[in-house]
Length: 458
Ligand code: IPT
Image (cartoon, rainbow, N blue to C red; front, side, top):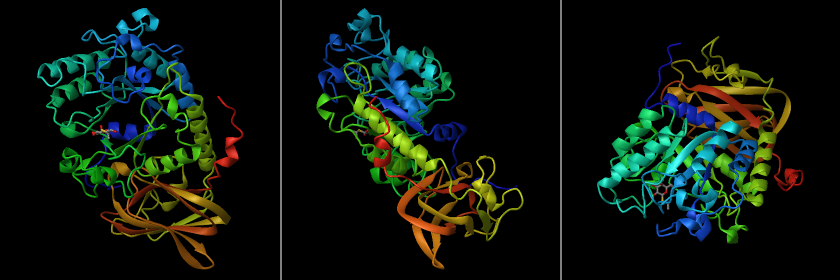
């Protein structure tokens, strides 16, 4: 076809990461029992004692809510290890849980496998317990723990390097990245600060649950290095690295469970908004569920996330443009004709004529349709090519602008006031090379209130 990639493009691992779509985060450890967010490392191991721990319950909930991947805090900043690390005395082996024979990392990974969820692990670089932290010996200590996690628990899909507490630290990131790469060919590295040379997914610059508009997957290496939160949020068109954003946020106020935050759980409505502002903005979902002192996802969290998932499933069940007549001001016929955008097969897509940077693609539905959101995808494997576009609907013979945007990427989705029309078009207003678009759909998102009553308390 002669379609050449433009600029920085995703790796095979990053495409797998995009396609995994939604990852659940589990913050669990001594903080769950001390009611803290950041333990200082002096917590007694005997504090850790979940009474009904069941990682399978976690998996049932997230699976039903449409997640494909899950990440567990194997060790948070307090240094307490949820697995019996050979290299530390501050571990689950000294806790009353299963009389010191427990291994939550193992339980987690086994539950993942049982439910077809891909496991990932968080191992905090900042360690407030280890006497080695802040010295060169810590590089070996951390590397040993990382090696345990990367070699004893099967295939791991994401390694999460939290930058918190590590601004001044001098770590041997290259050695740690080498450990991940050697043992885990499918493992994406999330990270920041000194690790930027090795990271494949970036922080989105906030913990409030939204990517920027735009949110380019490209960004400059220099912005990553200084952790420029504005650029982390929006990326940079033409940036020299392809490092897509991951939107980590908690379903509750805190990352860890606190009973007094049972009233501060994101509502289904809020979670739907989160989907649009992360997954719908060319970024990854990383939604945290803090297991409680029983070791279970709390009932309120379960109910809200399942209600949100139901809304999203209902919304995207039918593309209202199915069966529409598609035309474009230019198209690479026959292989990349514009009608390919309505086919589910991701190997079929639309490409504008090589010389046409500003095509318009028009969709004429068989009858008037009523919708309030759209989803548009670029063939991101070929790079961010589009730099500006509008979505318009014909109303009473006039084209009405629904959205006027810059970025598409793996997926761009947005909702707006409900509109009824028979004709919709995508007007590409700016591109650096001829646009290549994978799919387009318009949908009707029901009110959250319409489903909340149909789901029983779990
Ligand atoms: C913040 C870190 O500074 C950043 O590097 C990244 O790890 C981020 O957390 C992940 O959410 S620290 C937080 C208190 C904002």
